[in-house]
Image (cartoon, rainbow, N blue to C red):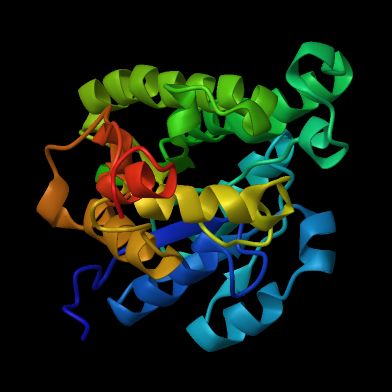
Length: 273
């Protein structure tokens, strides 16, 4: 059921690769709620994914942009305002990449060139995006920016290697820019710490399937799906959350605040089944 929560709002959604992507689900939900938006991704990701099908489904335009390039981000915000007919009301930052994880390099042996690339793509890109929009005055009053993160920024998950550090930086950028943008024109900047989610990127992490099941057994509500996350993002884009900013919001079924569950205790043989 749609509620027209985003009727008349204009947005930019990054990172939609395929129908498993959280960004893909966000685009579908935003469209259902009455928003118009531009889809964007890096050219190489667009060649790998199915973004054209999403654009057709949501009646959206695509503006390719490398999020590490200030020049391309400037073009993205310029074209988006021209296409949508005004300033931007919401932005989804759903961008992440780790060559170290892809190559299965353990944390103590990280390749620093890969590390720097991951920082630039996955965290600094948020700063660049917000900085470009700030200088262009591209975001409307009370606009909302949401970046997707993960609880590894607060807790250690060995398999997540340097992405834990990078997500911590991402969350810090959201807080810092949220302060400056809030003073300027009441723009909100938040991060959403989502459950392990069976996206194309997530399932590429070694041991992801086992950890997905573990998190699902810990969380009282179970793992939040990509669709659940999309619904939550829509509320953060809407006028219902105008006073929420500079927050890292856990959307994980209670996983982040549960020490241990009865189910895990029983599986470990610590209590009787």
